[in-house]
Amino acid sequence: MGTTRDLTLADGRALRVHDTGRGAVLTVVWHHGTPQTGALLAPVVEAADARDIRVISYGRPGYGGSAVQAGRTIASAADDVRQLADALGVGRFAVLGASGGGPHALACGALLPDRVSGVVCHASPAPYTEEFDWYAGMIDDSELRAGREGREASLAHGETAEFNEEQFLPIDWKALETTWSSLGKDAGAAGGSAEGQADDQVALASPWGFDLSAVTVPVLLAQGGADRVIPASHAEWLLRGLPDAELWLRPRDGHISVLNTIPVTLDWLLALS
Image (cartoon, rainbow, N blue to C red):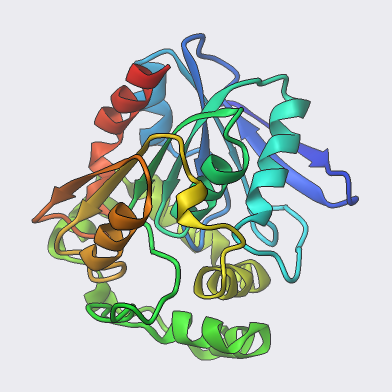
């Protein structure tokens, strides 16, 4: 689907980057979910190719060949993306994130406003807050609760945690069996990335390193109203905190099936370019 290379960042870390290398209209940087390897996913590439969009993806630290970066925050992603864009000769680009990738996409919108044309988040968590019940509606909140306790607790949780299949709706399982089968396989491949997953959970449940008010570029939130992993209350909170955002709420969708909107959300990004 494209090329893969390892970039050496300014601090000496290796970052594994995947690039379709084609598409003249727009470049989109994909921020993968938790856990994923960062490899290009067929449905994203197919939708992008149909629109002459270049897709660049990368494994966050600890995933898919990228070196671990203990202590990273959500904000840390912005500098990694800046460096990979510079290395690939990309000036302006859009960002698209799914689930745990959503906050990292928002970090780019906040901290790289001169480079980012727009942000799309699918099923993104909101920053941790006690101003609403952050865990309400999650079938299994144990990973994020462990993340709130810190890296050691998160690593320990990962050693015994088992996936609760009730988190996914029948429509999610259907998506994983058909259109999004590549995502399911990639999540399985990322299952051994214990440090990457633990560091994601800590970063998601800790201060992100930027305020939502700093994301001044346009943001689109695509959210399943029936999502049992990241409930719709998170998207509603993000909508209230972001200066220039709109919410596409799909009442029957869950955590995976909402990704079927990616062709349309890519159209939304194209309209900004």
